[in-house]
Length: 304
Image (cartoon, rainbow, N blue to C red; front, side, top):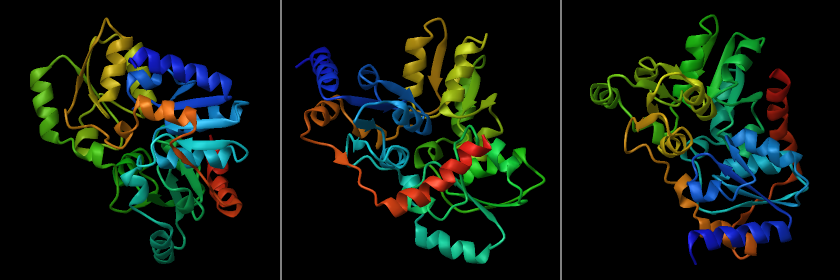
């Protein structure tokens, strides 16, 4: 079958079986083209909760599918590729953070959305990369334990100097591959390009950027900017998507190695087989875990 034939079959099956397909923006274009919603992880889970579809397929990684299940307990939620995990979400577990909390009992625990549902059950509030500064600013406590991404936590702490942040050694290995040397080489090669980076990047890169923000923020900035050339410091699929969308502008990857292999694990055939009901991993979650994990997400929504 050709790509177009597979896509047509997916569209046919999702209509017949009342399926909603979610695709994170790090997915390949052929998957985005068959999705009902595309975007960042939390935004996708919100859209899934609004839809009447009985089944939701997440083309992303496991913590994203778990977030969908937390917000849509009555829906059948399927992770399109069972091996698509998130190293950052998996590097800290509930037992570890419970021990850390004992050492910092007066700290508010802020969990990045890139965490497991189990870990969210013991956290006070959840944040996304776009909402982290706003929410941490609103927290009454002046002491914050930010997990798991120390790079995002450092960037947030720089925006809120009057609060004390405790950061642990964790983060995104994909964004961590980029270095200050990559920035130097890119700037020498494309001197007129603006540098747009994700706050999961190392502080030495963030401080050199013309814009720092979430994946959606980076894409919106590039779309609206009068500037015509950009260096993109996040997963390289964003370079492809922006170049396809903004053909009057030029986009360069900060590093050719900034590729998330977990995101790239999902193929168009995986999506087809999920629609057929012969593959994918159905997300199961006990109600106690779901309710406890949802509390810190509800707190995030409440705090804006």
